[in-house]
Image (tube, rainbow, N blue to C red):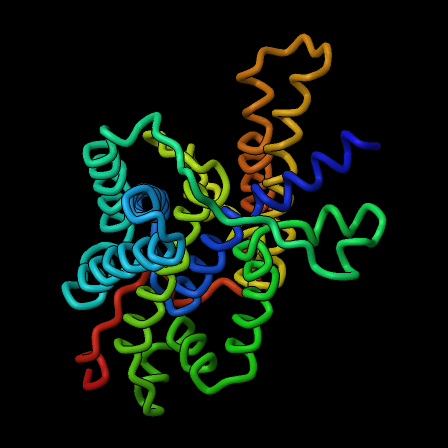
Length: 308
């Protein structure tokens, strides 16, 4: 029983990394912009967050710094795909390559260093005393608790606010939205930048709040998993809970199975969550179209098309 509780507790902490990035990607994609640069943005957020935390010993500045670098990379992607009408897939892949290379180059002197300060665990009064669930859910740091409420806030914005309606309509029918007075280009810019902010924060949480160190390529493919989890969540931030923590649980399962007399090589145990992701994507491709898939996702919008 103790081992199961340990795995579930670690699943929440690990899944939070993916949850922030998944929410950011959902925001971006619901506006009609596909961002395949998640891995690169996460790496830059992880490095920049760690660097700021290590040099200033300020955790708040670390998160803000990672959010800023995420916003800048989101802005670059928005400029390339919205203003210059570049191919969204190519632009996203370029961001990933840039983020991977730049974080490795600038972070080479930070490898092996660890933080002397980090986010402290906060036990929620009363709730943390609940048997089993209290330890699993209510004994984490502030970034985990913020991740608990973030999908609810984003869901409310999507479904109960005018900006959320404008966002969703921009991803469904951009031309009709423009005719109705929605500034599609502005909405897509904002969505891509805000998405980049959350992706950058996910990277900072990984290096500052979770592992407390910097290692080249430390995201280990989580950015690509994020893109798959957006499909898993059907572009619904509430369902993103399940996908993120499921991946976190599978990751911890693979790590904890090493404690037992398992014949399989360690590398195969670590690959469990990635194998699951591949199988899930295969299942989705056989099942067909997802109901919340934005109709205009990945398609460039030309404002001039209103007249022709």
